[in-house]
Image (cartoon, rainbow, N blue to C red; front, side, top):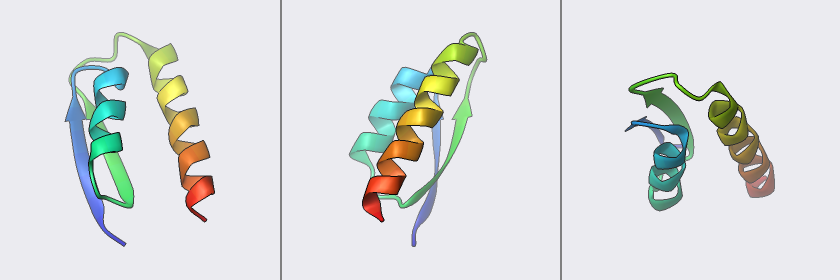
Length: 54
């Protein structure tokens, strides 16, 4: 298992970076917390994608 850190300006940018990386586990660091709703959506997407990996 390979872990990595994703730094982004917003949840959408973080998701794009995650989609193009090769890590198995992520720590997401955002520059600002303007959109808590966006973070919730990102978390739900990541949960569903990790459950598909098995």
